[in-house]
Image (cartoon, rainbow, N blue to C red):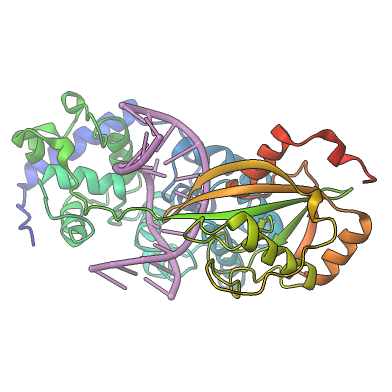
Length: 397
DNA sequence: GATACGTGGCC
DNA sequence: TGGCCAAGTAT
């Protein structure tokens, strides 16, 4: 428990004004800051920006606003369309909760976001940060907005050396000292811009910082040491095979279960992602997966797949198995594990396609021109494009 | 409190 | 090149 040293109010007041002056002169002209403040736009941008960089989120924000200009438009959208538009942005639970929240706002609030932090906090996908940010930025309420940027500023300002996340309560207390009703919406944005442009994680530019005279970390000589974080556990590696089944109309994809990794997204059928490549993922594991696809169960492949090393009976080779082309393999790093995946490609006849779709009701055909897949699967199609011979695309094989 | 949950850029 | 980092939330 770090004791927060209360700064004298006159100093806080002066520094606060200095940071707002800096923001007026140097704040970023981001798309969601243009025009009148609109709770829907503020909320949309905040959700997209969770754990996501501004350059990555910006084009998605523009596209969503074009497709669904109001919360009512979004609430009326098809689930699959929203998920497809989110593809590539990551943390897909955000998209499911975004849609759920839009529908709650329309149903319970007549399409108008509640203008108080407590009610915002109850909405799907709203946590302490987003509720405070929307309250402040959309409704100009003096909420205590604390995100990773503001955590960095506060741990440096007060030299809080308790490792995160244990330091969060102290950080909140520190940040709360700076909140005032005057320019309540600009304040957190000024802090976040300053944290991004000046109080950066690495090589902070302290000689440009409006708060430098009060910064204990700077005074002690190592501001980049803050915030202190607990060491991360090593990231395990897993292995799998992904199947690119080409048809006359596109590629076979499955709608994934709503919960868990890539929940609610379209994906390519794939084997279980096993912790070891031994004895042979691209042999027995792949063969078992293909057998399940033939018999149905393509949407539960991770649930009842035998793990590598089990002496589950190897099914007889399928007819046409030799038509698979191994396009290569690639790596994809998720939050909590790294995946090495081999890409198997083959052309399905119309009969096989019909049979596969009958057996696996979560499967459908996605035109190759559509960009609806999470990056982990988009990479497989890209690898296919780079390596597979054109004759696989012919309509009759 | 610990863990699950994506992706891309940077050094 | 592998680890770190980015406007967190849900369980």
